[in-house]
Length: 122
Image (tube, rainbow, N blue to C red; front, side, top):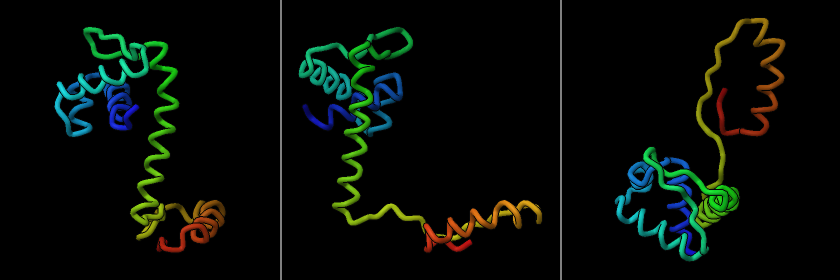
């Protein structure tokens, strides 16, 4: 199974059509169709029903979405680690609130937030 084909599967399941999925991934519609066909052949199941309105997941396809999303998450983590990027927040955060809300409710939350994200200026 090719990760690129799993990305195609996820894009089609999220976008609903080959055209929209192709735009999302920066590919062509025929390529998306070929990659989907290759994935369906490799798993031995039809993953979508083709309808007038677009593509609808079959039972097999719906069962695979959760696993494909986990694969996607792991690939993204892998890519972040390879590029040395950490998932940190930084920059300026501006908040407007009433005096009472800011003093009594927001202040404790912002203290905890500032501890978790020291690169954010509040």
